[in-house]
Image (cartoon, rainbow, N blue to C red; front, side, top):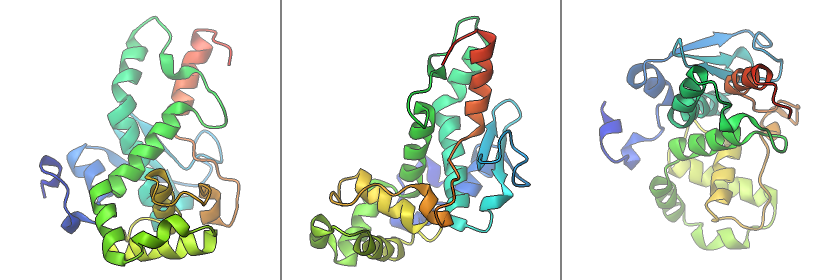
Length: 215
């Protein structure tokens, strides 16, 4: 208890994001039937006003994606809650509303926050060092070998509530692996087309309509 008031240590992994959301941030986690969100491919959402994190039942059988979804929504709480609340009360358009590319900036930010929360850089670095593969990583060129290395780091770092794909992408983000492309979340679900899109996107789109902002 209370790890949020001190530096995170190796003993804290796996990072208990569910407990952080419920006990430290006072959010209720609501698992809802797949497709009951605003769109069938939405895996999770956050309702700031009611302090509810919604998670699609589609991910509850996938521990890594379930925890990443909660961590992603915690990211929205930390990074975007105040912006949303300020925009809600103001008569000026919020700066976050415009979408560029397939994923809005807010979603990319929440993804990166989730990865950092679940796999703090110091703990990840220690796991890489202890796994004995540090010198091999810059020579890794195949996805197969990259995933094998990520699995060793996952086990060594006790990132038991994180998917292999998330560990691999974190290693790519931090430039431990530079010759393998970023792996999309679709790999987790056998290439099903399930975009990571949180409830905040739908909430902000309401502002686009309200202020007649074209995308």
